[in-house]
Length: 104
Image 1 (cartoon, rainbow, N blue to C red):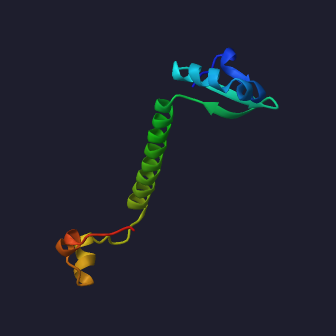
Image 2: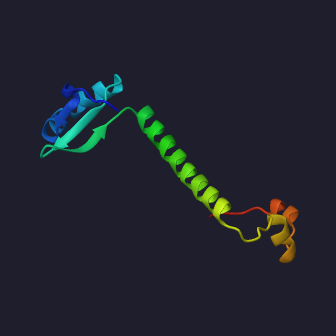
């Protein structure tokens, strides 16, 4: 994300003019908020926040995929299918599909 110099604001200015800042953000601008010459916050349109959340989820998925690929390619011990493990413990996968899990 590139932010133009006029879109970098001190926290005191943002605090005094928050209504104007939100109007600018609503128009599609992103405002970087600075405190003691360090970035402390960004005021961004909600669509950008949704994009950042989606990117974060994809990063998590990729990290898990990489971990699983490493384990699969470096583990030379015998592997077991879910069906084999379920059968060993006397669990029917069909019965598990029928069960309703209540997270409350």
